[in-house]
Length: 148
Image (cartoon, rainbow, N blue to C red):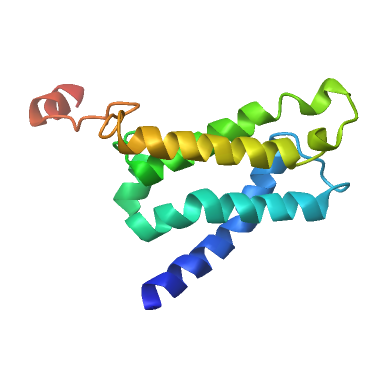
């Protein structure tokens, strides 16, 4: 029970950071604040909550996740798929068709769910254990001596 409560609190604390990130990626600053805040909460609970539950607050694990050196699994694949899906789903918004499904943030939420599902399935099956980047290797003693 304490772990779930801690994960819930940490996830709620990430919502403002995700909100600012959406603004930096093109969301309106003042016109759609409520919708962007709800999108941020949605994104945090869909993609970050499982990561916090699986990895806790382990700094090394979060550095590997942020540096794309962590091996893919279901939760990490879900995060990457959700991010990619949300980003790609922003493409139809500026097409000016004036359709209801084009309004902010409908396409983003749909793309986030589709990407999350695809990332979770692929990360848990076909791409399980694959790393997107190689971890930086620590310099050997000979390399350290050579550098000085």
